[in-house]
Image (cartoon, rainbow, N blue to C red; front, side):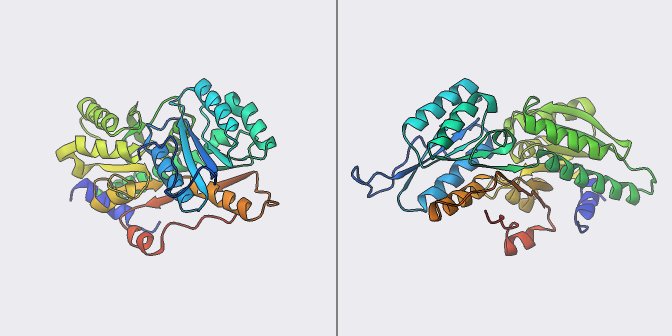
Length: 333
């Protein structure tokens, strides 16, 4: 039986284009809308593109609001300037994923003091003295991927009659300097180390892109010849890796991260078999939007300093339940 089918057996065990400023049809100059601004750290990343698209949809579902997004392209000084320019527009709310929290901390304080609802996104956003922040434990994403890998390799060892769990693993990070990537890597490795026979044979950054995933997987195949599991820090790189592996794909378990819907999202890729599992990484802006709506409905409402959302494992077994019941509901603000 091909190794990938053995891994499937283990997994089945229980366990937009950027918008610089958008106005809705029918709005006039004498009816100024409330402005919601999203400041992204690097909108070339699929995750942040999805955040832009999602928040834009949510904002436009609410009459009387407009949406604007500005991307820092990884430049902390540029983002600080964008924040200052945004404050001059007197927005209703600012959502921000900081490139560097220190570079925008003073601007965020000024915004909050001026009555702007500021939502920090991600672990760097949680460092700000914003109105509130929304995070996901990046280490938990890596830990979950490690649990999938070790469970699958344990099943493989059992099927082959071996008492020691062993396996060869490839990891494709998003960015070696990105704090989230570092935490995912550390927790993934910690999970693998529970079984000394499991080793990482190749570890390289793929730049969050499908092409980067394809290149790193091809490189790993050329240098290592054979491996059992490939863990990519997002689904775009996982898809690129899947395409690069060609006829070796059947023998390699591919784990992605993000778990979006859509043609190249992890939810769809697991469904089509292009990848074998994904860890759903909540987009954060949806929870931030719930906080903002509550504030609009009750100006006296004081949100919690932070909200932490839980990731969800997506496997072939869990797909039907997720289609029927959806992802776990977001907490109430």
